[in-house]
Image (cartoon, helix red, strand yellow):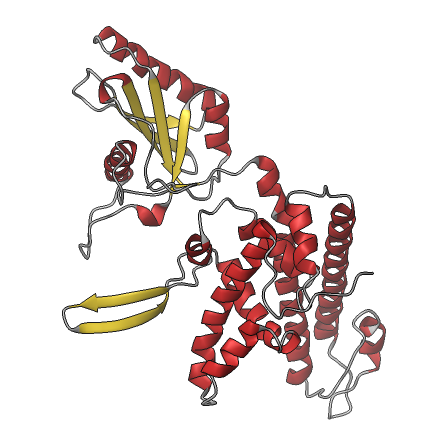
Length: 387
């Protein structure tokens, strides 16, 4: 039975005699386009500069060659691997009336030789074989990535930018503290906004002031710290403003529903909604798999073992959910999920708690997905009081 939103195989019937198939190996300075043209035994291969109109001209030229060979083209299918270039090319090709897909790189089978040959030409051959199998409706050849709209991609930027800035702020604070420790200045609690005025008064254990080069370095670090902190506050302020004016349906409504759960803040809710919960995933298994919170069994003969988390999904969601699972135990101790966790970690062993927190994160993510998609409130979960 066909499952909704299943990208593991193509549903449209594939007629090889009337379908032009092309794959693109995207590079920083050039593209390598490989095609399968009906009626032409040779598979054309063209290296070209990054130029979208030239790509369209190349596809149309191959279409004309197929028509001259007695094979009129009714369908043009193009695919490339997901990567640094994102999805803009797929959106642009679809706007030109060309069927375009984006292949998950990890879903393509490659040789397991220790030193296998790898060139762009060989990569296009692998992509062609995988893409043809997918178009035929055969499973396990490759999987396609859902192509987001420009608005959906843009909605992820505030959360991702804030994550980057928070990491930068932590690095600056650690660098400043390490500098104080190197000078022997310990136990200092500074207001970072007023720290620059206090630096000149600080003394080392020898009674000497901070050396001039180190003092200048600290002032620059503190100025950078204040700048980054102001940017973080600006992102949070703009996000709250957009959330207030968001429509009653869609991602904005999902964020408000999640933020209403005690223990989940606006930042976590915004990240979860735009990274995973607003995606059209077919079932709860797909939700857990997208977050990389599923196991990776290793079974061969009599050997049976678990290699740990698959870690093949969205790393941001996986990190956020594990952190949220620990926080959930603190804010929702009476919920069924928290009781389930406590019952299975009653032995008090640290390794048991660490393993089971991943299971709790998986269950919690599925419960939150059901909350925002079906309106099912997890049993025992406490909501915030209405303002």
